[in-house]
Image (cartoon, rainbow, N blue to C red):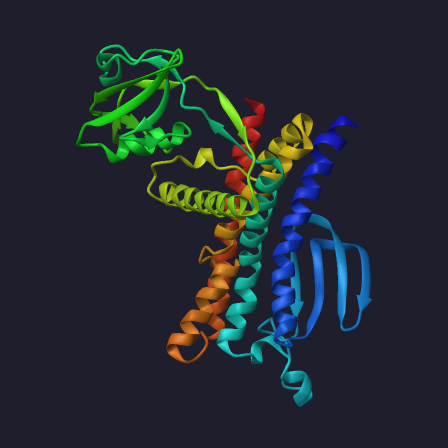
Length: 360
């Protein structure tokens, strides 16, 4: 019972929200351009629930690992020649390249929009936590130690610019890479000003790469403070967070191709289910930003130029826009077969990784 409540149910709900918004993007833009939508399905495989409203059948299917919006004339083997002129005008294949690009691209973009909305409202109602500028440790023989900075000191300004949190200290140190900086600290109610210059050291970044980083030799105390945000601040914070997750997702894919990150680091549905269950047990509130993070990942992954993904269809359409004619049916079929094999191989790798983590 606990497995169902804390793992299966949250996983299905999270996946359902992400799939619904993705397919909703395709659906709404197709409707906007008067394209006939035959089916809107959450999930694949056998139908569990089906209801027709107007010209569209709305379906919930048995396998919740995806979904689809089926449009008239979308498949290459659809017979559009026998349609009436009015029906043919509503076929996906008879739309301009620009309209088809908009319909296909709307799915990933709605995932990005979902993440942005979640982050903005989350920050608006929950605020944010800021790592304070209190020093928890000073490295011996470092610039900070030589300048007299001590454990428990609170950094309040750099070159007379106020410091509100630890991230601002990092930015200030990076900006003073090759010149001295004047730091004002608060110690036992007294303000003390010291001057020091950062030293360039070799450190490892998020991807395990050696990078040159300016350091002054202090470590945060790990203390956080809660900060309430107004609507404008929450919007800016949400935009920033969405951009940061997008950038990290793109960089992760690049590092995988560069072989800097091993393939064993990537995970699939099982890993997402585990993380969903862990967060659900801690607090259901934690699932909200998690949905946004996974939604950004889906936005990026769906734009990869693999033929069976939206990115592959977009690539075909861009080729058609440049050349003035669509790729031949034979070339598209070969590309789709290659894309399917590539996707199945990737799925096998992530499932193997997920199972290996469980066994470990």
